[in-house]
Picture (cartoon, rainbow, N blue to C red):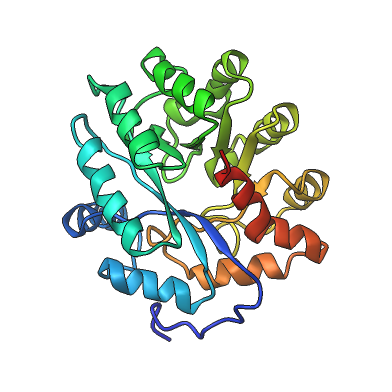
Length: 280
């Protein structure tokens, strides 16, 4: 079956995919081509409209669109593009791009967070080659905390391990901004899951997302994941990483639905926790 022709799933359960990436066509193609050069298969190389239709067809009713940039002076343009896209598709929630070398960080954030009412920011520590403890990001943390907006952080050794992606780098930030609303993407895997869970247990607004994990043949289900979700069911949020993935997001949804957990917990993961994260 074609990767873009998965059978439509039952839409009775509301589903929020809290980790997708959409970019202007040329930039998206460049990102996917980078993965292809690393030896990955990138089956979802389609126009934005087709990608969104596909998500709707597999039952996704809401999604966080995570912007990011690899160099300075790009963020404002990407954020404008996201604003226009999410105005057209009202079920999308845009998370602003920001680069730590931008000279006008506060201006970029005021436009995205205040003028356009974005629910938060995405920082891709691997792509940007920046630690979350870098002091150039402190104005962002302050502004997000004041507005009770969210931050989604790539703190994971996927696709490649980097000193910038360790969850331990978040400790200093949370000590200074203990109420900061943060999602640790990819559950901190493959090396930092335990610490990510400890932070979620210790700080009221720290979450983990499941992007690129559930349903992925690379990551067989682990008992420690189930125990953590069962212990902290309000702290895990479903996401896929679509379209920057080489397996079906429908498989990720199905894998979550088949977890040996209470149906109420699955509802939290698929919808309620994401909606709480959106609230300011």
